[in-house]
Image (cartoon, rainbow, N blue to C red; front, side, top):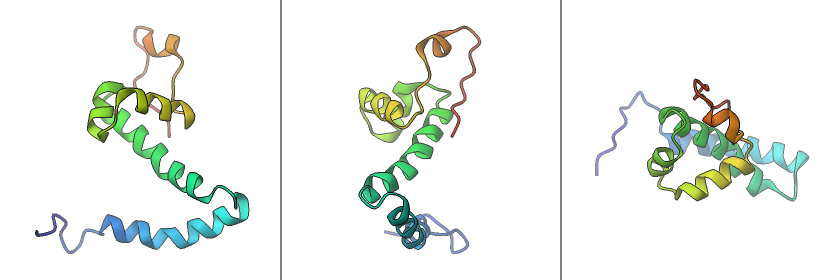
Length: 100
């Protein structure tokens, strides 16, 4: 199957693989017992925030975009500090953007 990236576009898998050694070295210093969890959170937080941004804060649509259950998305957002308080989220004219 042909690649959908052009020769000038960096391969996402290569970009991540190149960043992993430095990431692990840094996490081993600060969180040696949580390297896996912290590394995943570093990728997951901006990924979820971007999906929410693309869907203008609509959690159901963001979950579908990511292939997650909405409740799973909500739980992960809360755990990663992306959850907005209900009062702010439901207020008329409340901003839709999620900070990273």
